[in-house]
Every structure is written in structure tokens, then in C-alpha cells.
Length: 156
Image (cartoon, rainbow, N blue to C red):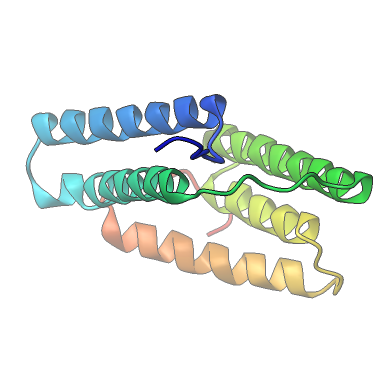
């Protein structure tokens, strides 16, 4: 249709295609390696969820007909701050991935969740460590009951 514009930029579209390709490849690789349920219990549902999300985002942006209005400088600064927080969280996730084998799954997860909550804006000093401890305990126990292989742990 003439005059129809999408809010999806080419860089975002390329990133979505990369995510979709990675999801398809991971599912194909996992299924071709072994079709046993315990090998596929996490990989295939996550891959399917990623594909559904990518398709949903693309369809939503193709149906969108209006262009976003221009933003004032205050909104642009807020957007820049939000982007910086997202990049910091992405860096923390990378540190979590490296820390899984260095300091253990439990400590890396605890620190990631704690700092992520603080960066998210929580003002109460006691809530982030409490939530991080409960989340870590449930995650470690849940993964421990799902997967038979040992994860490196420092405390739990």
C-alpha cells in the first residue's frame, strides 16, 4: 500500500532475522543431536517462543501505519538513559555468563539479579538482596531437579 510506513528500522529487522536464524539453527542442532525429551526440554520451547516473538514483532510493525511523532530533548535524554541502562544490563549478562564457571552459578546469578534490580530503580536497600537470594535459591534448586549434570556452585 502506498504511504504505509513501518516503525521497524533496517537494523532492528536485521537483528530479528539474526535471532530467528539462531533459534532455527539451535532447534535443528538440538533435535538432530538427540530426540530424547530431557535433551530438548528447554531448547525447543525457547526456540519456538523466540520464533513466535519475532513473527509477532514483524507483523505488528507491518500493520502499523503511523510514524512516531518527533520527540523533544527531554524525551530524547530519557530514551538515551534507557538505552544506556539496557547496555549496562547486557554487559552484566555477559559478566553473568563468564562468572558461571568462575565464581559459580549461584553467586553469579545472585549478583546479576541484585545489581539488575538496583539498576532498575529499586530504592529500598533490603529488597534487592532478599529477592536475589530467593530467586537464586529457586533457580538453583529448579535447575538442579531438571538437569542431571552438576553445575559449579560456590555456596548452595
